[in-house]
Every structure is written in structure tokens, then in C-alpha cells.
Amino acid sequence: MRDELLRAVDEGRRREAELESLVTDDPADPDGRWTVKDHLAHVSWWRSRNVHTLDALRTGAQLPPPTVDQGEKQNAIIYAQVKDRPAAEVIREARESWAALRRALADSTEDDLTKPHPREPGSEVWELVPGMIGHSGTHLWSCLLDAGDEERALEIARWGSDMEARFFTTPEKLADSRYNLACVYARLGRADEAIPLLRESLAANPALAAWARKDADLDPIREELAPILS
Image (cartoon, rainbow, N blue to C red; front, side, top):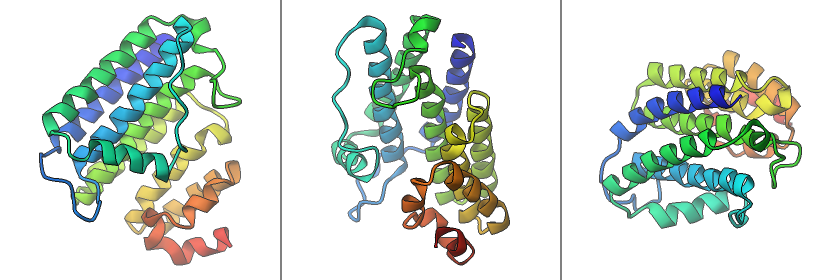
């Protein structure tokens, strides 16, 4: 498992280099809209936190403190912390977080990796890794769509979904990656491809429905989506 995870990390690092290439040093948007730099800083923050968790479980050190939540509140806190940081610093820290992740994996035994996740009931700690890589891919395709590169965005989204499917097999574990792929199809107005994926992900994780009702990515297919969210 460790070798497979290391290969996936190297793959994810190469993909994120594309996100780095889009980063500029533009000032923070006055309306709070994320720049590419903010997207990169965001995924780097979560990756560093997860590396801390991996290291703590391996060494017996203290776990990172709990987050406010796993969604909007915590992400707003992260954004406030990183929005004014220079691009060079954000890129450097993102690269360092990938290197730290690789070291954490290389130093881990199979027993370390299969320890229960301390804050995710029913999950083992290794599951953080494909989740981190998929998370980076999600922010890359979102930025590519914003830049108008629809073909490349869809390619990245399919890659991220396929990558997570190499590690997870149950519908419950695949719900988030299926949902994220559906979001790309939705933003492209391709309801026929988005709706089956959304049905699959919502059936496996009904809690996603609350987010789907307000997720702006799904706005282009609201009419088609209504029957499965009613």
C-alpha cells in the first residue's frame, strides 16, 4: 500500500504544478472571491494538517487541534490567514507540504498506515492520502474552468475520480469523488452526465444533499437536479 500511495503522491505533485503555474501575485479580491493563489494556499494548509496527523500517529506526538468544521467556517478562517501572503511564499509552502507528505509516508510502516483515523470513524489513516490528492485536483479543475479551459478541467476531474477509485471500492468511500466529478459536468451544462453521478453520490452519502442544495457548481442544472433533491 505504501508504494502505491507514494506513486499517487508523485502523480498528484506533478498535477499541482499546473495549479502553481496559474498563480499570480494579484491582491486579494475585495469581494472575497478566491484567486488561484488562494486555492493553492488552501490545499497546502489542509495537506500540512494531514501530514501532521500522519506524523503524530506514527510517533505518538500530539495531534493537530480540531478544526471549526470541515466546511465553510474553517475554510473562511484559512482564507483570512492566507489571502495577503505573497505568491512565492505560498508556492514554496505548497511544495514543502508535498515533500513532507512523501517523507511521512516513506517513514510509515504498513501498520502505521492502517491505524484508525482519530477523528474519522470507520476510516484508516492512509485514506487521508488519496483524499488529499483528489482535493488538490478539485481545486485545479475549478481554476481551469474559471480560466475557460473546459477540456483540461474535465481531464483533471476524470483523473482525480479515477485516482481515488484505485484506492476505494465502496460507494460510501467514493461518494465525494463522484460528487466532485458531477460538479464539473454540471458547470459545463452536461446534466445527462452529472445527474447519474449525483444520484450515486447522494445515495451513498445522504449528508451531501444539504451542500448540493446551495452548491453554486450545480446551478447550471438546477432544474434537472430538483427531483432528486426534493
